[in-house]
Length: 235
Image 1 (cartoon, rainbow, N blue to C red):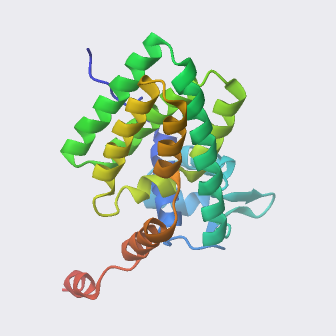
Image 2 (tube, one colour):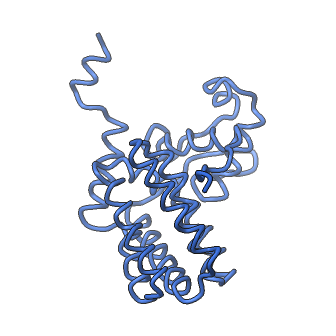
C-alpha cells in the first residue's frame, strides 16, 4: 500500500498557516490591523497570495475584513473557544456513531491508511505533519458517516478550530496521547460499536480542565519565551 501523504499546500495556504499561528500565539493580538503590503514584505511575497490567505482566514473567523478598513484580528475569548470545542466534540461524536454503523470496506481501508500515516508522523516527532494527516483521518470519519449535512458542518467548524487543534499538538506528549486515542477510535468504528465510537471521539476532541490550561500555557510560552531564552537571544 502506497504511503499516505497530505495534499500539496498552496502558497496562500502556507501563508495562512503562518499568519494564523501569529494570531493564535498573540504576535498579532486582537485589534491588530493586518496590512497586506506589510505582510507581503514580511513574508517576501506579492500581495496576491497574502490577500487570498486573509480571505481564507476570514472564512473561519480568525480575521475580520471590513470595507475601507481592511483586515483586523477580532477578539477570541477563552470561554468562546471552549464552547466551540464542546460543539465540535458533539459533531464528531455523531460522525463516529454513524460511521460505526455505515462505514464501507473501502472507507475502512482509508481510515486505517490515515491512522498508519499518523503513526509515521508521530514516530518522526513532526507535529505539523501529524496534524495535516490528522485532518485526513478525521475527514475519513466524516465521510464514513454518510450524512452530507453533518460532514459539512463538522468540516466547517474543524476549519475554524484548526489553528488551536494544531497548536494543541505541541503540548508535551499530546501527540502520543492523540495517536492512542485514534487507535481506540479506529477499533470502535471498525468493530461496529457506535456508542463507544461516539464516546471516544467526544473525549478526543473536547478541551477542558487541565488540557485547556495546558493549551493556554503553551500559547503563552510561544508568545513569551522564558527569561533564559530572552537573555540568550540578546547575546
